Image 1 (cartoon, rainbow, N blue to C red):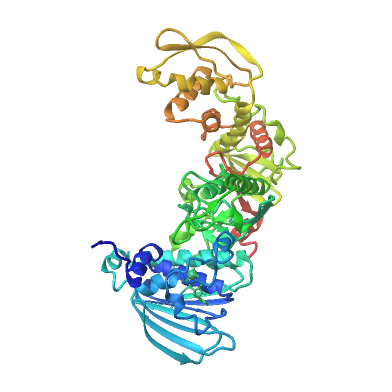
Image 2 (image 1 turned 30 degrees about the vertical axis):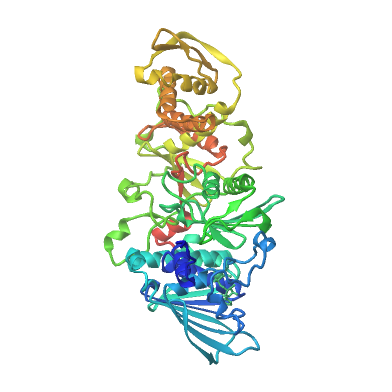
Length: 607
Ligand code: ADP
Ligand code: MG
């Protein structure tokens, strides 16, 4: 006698539930998707104990036919597809016919539903088995209640995290649905506390505001782009607002929120150098495309998808974001916080859009610094500590070439305000006046941005001319680095540094590119070499990029360095010509602004 047998439906469902229903948030997700597929314009969610005790989802969608209601709880029973042809043209969120069967098999479910012209019915199920069916009176739509989730699967129950964590997972789902379906009025409440409430206006920015607050999303940018295959709309919260994880990037493909590493990376590439290291933007990326181009049948919970033209979409996303951001004036405004109960809080200054401040300005005592006195002579006055100093030969003058393609900032570049230099603060910040207020520029960050863009262009260019060195430089290579020199030499050659073998463990450099910074060349070559040696696997483009950032940092004026008026003026002229003047290549701000209005408020000229 054989030993193979077909599993009972209830066992098969429980096995499937292991994949589809990981936690209360998965139930919320599946039921919300069903409501949306039923054409609901309003969905209410009620939760107890983060959904572990009870989840109720009510919608005003088309409801179930009375004769369908029981069948819906059978595995692979669906109204959304009927054959293979449909499987490749999915326009609904659901299609696997698994969710209700899976959920019901691990909980106690009550379904109330009514379709137009039909009578309302109520079903109760226990572990997926029907225990009651009756007629009820109700309005069109569906209400599904899931109680005691996982009560019959103790291992899964044990695996659940704290209420707090499970609730956070649910909130994440709710937010994504709100962004993907701003035309649906979504309301969710957990034990009396409202988790989300959207107005169904159809405007993603409204949904963003209901999740993050109006203050945070002020100035959110909308970027659009199209190719023959894709229509893209990006909602980009200003890059000053950052988060510690990538989770605040929402990707919506044909109305479905998905996770996709490559597309997320494309978003981040679009923000390149505008975000501090380890910080991530808040963005909603919506893409519509022919369903034939997207395979949604990859993951049991439909979280991941496969795209047939992924590279094309990545390119579109990256370029659309980059172009949009490069046309903006992205200067963080400084606002003193409103007086709070805590009197010490008044001392603090914060960036107005930064929800989690990257840097606490109060520690820099900017605020306590006496404002430089103006003389009758006007703006030209430089406070005594900052009197014109002879240029220091140890720094490169900020008069090195800037990339040609950004020579016309007015036409393509971002809106950089016209600024007049007032003076220097702590030999580190340039104080400027502009039409809208007072500006502080971090001199190091500013020059880093200028040099980074210059070096990047130079590194990317085919080598034109070289200059012979009067005294060639020789370098000794440590024996454990010698093994990697074969990989390193081509990288250095690419950026214009030709190393010739010179003895068993030494190399010699006889010439450098003409644009190469003249100061401390030997040290610079050593650093370029170290940069290449440090990396395990390097492609050329990454190396050029990292080398440009490294060299820009090393070659820029540091803080605590006095500059004369002309040097400061030149620095600002060059900065205004860059492609992205508002952050240094590490994503830190270059310039901050006190608006005239804020200043007037502080001096109580306006109330
Ligand atoms: P799928 O969504 O993949 O079809 P489900 O198990 O989630 O599978 O649902 C099974 C069927 O039940 C759906 O195809 C749909 O016809 C019906 N259904 C589920 N939820 C609703 C709802 N809220 N309103 C109307 N019909 C629903
Ligand atoms: Mg479904």
